[in-house]
Structure formats: C-alpha cells, structure tokens
Image 1: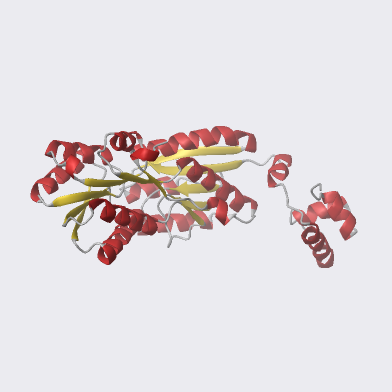
Image 2 (image 1 turned 120 degrees about the vertical axis):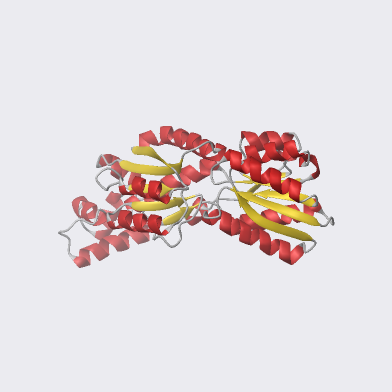
Length: 342
C-alpha cells in the first residue's frame, strides 16, 4: 500500500492543497474548524510528514555546534572522528556542524564558548562538559535565545537542556561493580578508583553505582577514595604510583574516565599490573591493546557513532518540532572482553 500524500489529505478533508500546506506548516489564515478537519484527515490516514523533503523545499539548513573538550583524550578523539564521518553523510540533509573546543575542567572556558553561540548562526548545540552553576546559566541563555540544547555523554539534568544522549552512568557503574567483584572472586583486598574529575556527573554516578554493588554483593572488598587526574597525565601517573606503593593488598582498579594511558604506565612501572583486575571505560586504541595483552580485563563502552548520530537526530527533531523516537536514541551499555574484541 502506498503512503498517504497531501493530495489524499486534501481530498478527505474537502479542502485545497494550499490549505493543507498552511495547516501542516502552522501558517495563519485558516479557520479553526478547517484546521481540525485537516488534522483529523492526517490522523485517520496515518500521514507522516517528510520533514527532510519539506526542509529541502524551503532550502532550510540545520546549523549545529558541538562543544567538546580538547586535550589528548582518545575517547574524545574517536568521538570527533565519528562526528566528522556523520557530518559527511549529513551534508545531503543540509546539516552544518562546527566543533567548538573547550577546556572542560575550566567552567569559564565552557561558558565563554557557550556565550559565543547565537541564534543568528546556530539552531542547536550539543555539549560535553561538567555541569556547574555557570554552565547551567549559559544553557538557560541558549534556551532563551531559541537554541535547542543536547547534553552529550555526561548529562546536565538541572540545566534545562532538551535531551541527554549517552549511557546511564549509574547503571554503567553498577555493571563495573559486578564485573570487578566476579573477576576478583573470593579474595579480600582494596579497589582503587581513578577518574579525570569528580566534578563530572558521569564520574559521580558511576562511583555511586559501583559503591552500591560493592556494598550489596562484595563486602570483602574495600573501596578506596577516588583519585583525580584533572586532565594531567603526569599527575595520574604520580598518584597511581603512590597508591600502588601504599596499598600492597590492592586487588583491583576501576578507571571511570579518560587517562587510561598514564594509569597503565604507572601500574606497569609498579610491577603490580599483572596481578590486578582492571576495569576501564571506552574502547580506544589504548584499551584495545591492553585487552589484547591481558592488562585490562573488561571495557565498558558505548557506540560513538550511535552517540553522534543520535545527537544530530535529536537536534533536528527539536528544530522541526517533531517527536523523538526514544527507543532509537537509547544508547546501549556494551561490555568488551579480549574474547569479543571487534
């Protein structure tokens, strides 16, 4: 059966094609009863509007900014590569994307970048940055200016953003806890937790989920306070080396964020790496190699291609005023072992 068209709507509603066009595009000059008749025809026929074709006819362009942290994070690097790939595919859909680099650990840098984005040049923004009062205020200004805002990878739930694209970090932390407990087994000992920053909501939620599982199911394991690298690889190496020396009963390490290269370097130098269970996040060249060499036991990851495509779809849907298909945009938590490496 062929899809219903605007001709079918006009015929069933008893109106002209021009009237159908006015109603579908919410233009003035149509009586309320006529609008109701057209909308009833749309519902009864199951008509789904082709927003791409409509935008193409209007010569509409989507202009999006992706605010991403700069630095040597391999995860952000893979994210940018996936975004460039998606951008090439989206050119036919009239999507223009600009990557805006920021110092994520400096709220003022993030705010300056967000404040530089105006509705004259952009329709929507995807933001990967920690939630701070300054960032919340900047998001509110973007929303007030009429831009759509998506939180990417790490949520900004109290900022008024339109949507979050990323995994459930609480569930990811619980997943890491289960993996750690089962890989360590019955051995008692201590677990070291490392991350880039505990200001990041994803790190906070992962830690909460991890701790909850440890308390529920693995009481023989003692969880140490979180260690932060603060975007400094040398600091990561130093604090991990100190922790490895200070805790001879260390049995596991949970890496909640970026910084896996200096983490592994410090553990190798300590001579402790082969005896530890290591659970990390995000499949990058470093964690891929570490899995192959049995230096990391499991990696909890998410499909970066899905992440950026989802962010683009959500921003477009917000611009077009159409519903978001939640099931399509739900990002899955994947567990990668040496045995199932892609």
